[in-house]
Length: 552
Image (cartoon, rainbow, N blue to C red; front, top):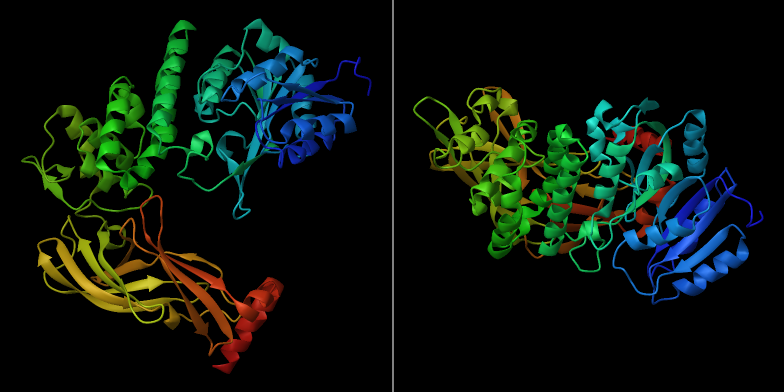
């Protein structure tokens, strides 16, 4: 294709010190089914081999152009904006060097633009875990069907889909509103996308995948991506700064009516990511975090809080009231039905989180658990809190545990309780009975030895992670709840010769390391089992199970 001819679409690939993955990203654009496009590689002043790789890619395909910033900008905005200045196509897309476009992405989004006059088109984003290969769709409920909206007011939930890379923009739309990426700040996508949603008169959503987003496991180092640096207080400050800029834009652009929807997105998505990490933060970090987020939380719409699940509202209120140790305890129940250690009932019979009735009207509203009916709900749905207070290694892969059970709603009868520890590798189930003795009203404690070698693994072996549960019974009903481990304890690995050594595995006992912090067991086949396991198709595994059943 001649460089003088105007292409249909410009795809900008931004890169910084990513020579290894840049060819993969560029190749995903080159192999698009719609070929009338140009590719602009925008290098944010890389110091590795990226400039040479970019030149070689451009030499191999006349559709590729390169530019290099004179100094590193430290973010995504400047390289995207510099590419916008030289882009020649009427439609624009953006790609990060560590991601890819699926082959039909450009065609699907361009077809939406050609179907009717719109300001941008957007599609589904496939998330791919780089460590496991597991795939999922980002915000699937928002991109499930093809639809054209007359502005963000038609579906304010779209604030949750704040990625700029999942969209194809009409150049005329960006120029008409002088819409560019804000430079010098992080989380630029959130501000850019909020502006685009509010300024667009019409946009189309297509259900086809248009972006492949490679997700690394959570990393606690400065080398992690910006969104993965939640341990840095500067990261918190950057996110709050962007939220304030969005709030100002909503007022200035006449979209203040959308504030509750935007606030709900912040609480449900942005704050929620930090909340899940709170159990792993020390007191100094928690205090600084509360200093940063507290003033901003006070500005948010009460309606945005009311739309959250009760567990999330509890954590938010405890942070706002600076009950920080309790906020860490409450955060371990996010995503799992974990009870508080204590409940308090006032003179009117209302039940609250913690050991006292909250002082303010606002705190009583947010910490009120009465509607959860913790005292009367069916036993299988009752909430307990099971914590490991002591953990020591026994012989082989054995683990000796002291388990403390909190029953704040007093659902268990007086006296010792029969319990069992349950873990299910594969289709098998290992259940270890133990006794919980009363310590004081609503608190029980017991000791149990967990021996992973006692589990019956499938003939084909088992590779995966399991989290033991505590099983209780009362009145003929059962209850299974998560088991919280110490947040940091030395992990260990033992070799277990399952089936008299015919199916050896390595079993690793470790803390979960994120979210609530459950006890975690990891099975890894070794030896011949590891070699043969990939050959065991579902049909072969079914036959093996039938054979094992016949031989019993």
